[in-house]
Amino acid sequence: MAAAAADGQFGDVWDGTTDVVRGAAGSGFLMLWLHRQDLAPGTLVDARRIGDWLLTQAAPASPEQDGAAAGLRWPMAPAYPRWMPNFSHGTAGVACFLAALQLELGPKAAAGRYAAAAARGAAHLLAIADRPDGGLRVHHHSPGGEQLHYLGWCHGPPGTARLFHALDCREP
Image 1 (cartoon, helix red, strand yellow):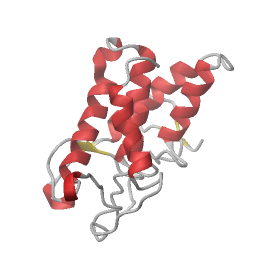
Image 2: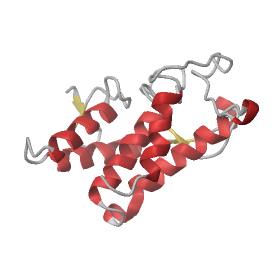
Image 3: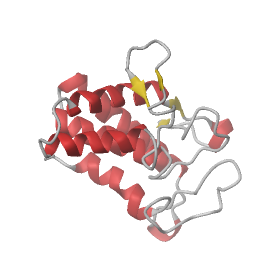
C-alpha cells in the first residue's frame, strides 16, 4: 500500500491504480472473498472503503476521449495516457467489483450507489462497443486501439461479460 487518499477519508489506497490486475478493484475482490470465507474480520469494511474510493475515480464518458458520452469510465491510473475499457485494466473490471460489492451489501445499502455506478459503467461499454452481426465487442484501448479487439479474459468478452453477469445476479 502506498499512499492514503488526499483527504485521508478512504484510508490506504494501492498506489492510485484502479484496475483488477494490480489495483484497488482486484484488492476489493480479494476483500469480498475473504469476507465470504469468514477468514479475516473487517474485510467487508475494507471492500466498502475501496468501493468508495473507486467512486471518486470515476470519470463521465467523453466524446472527445473515446467517441461516446454515455455512462462512467475508470482510468487504470491517473497519469496513464490510455483508457482501457475491459476487465483487467478498465471500466468493466472496476464496475464488476462495484456490482459485486453492492450484491454483498444488499440492494439498499449505500443507497444503491455501487450498483448505480456499475450500471453506468456498463452503459458506457455498450455505447462504445462495436456490434457486428448481432454481437458486441469492446476495443482494447483509446486513443489508438479502437480497431484492436482481444478474445481473452483480460481485454475480451470472457472478462468483460462478468460485469453484465454481476449486474444480473440476485444472490451473492
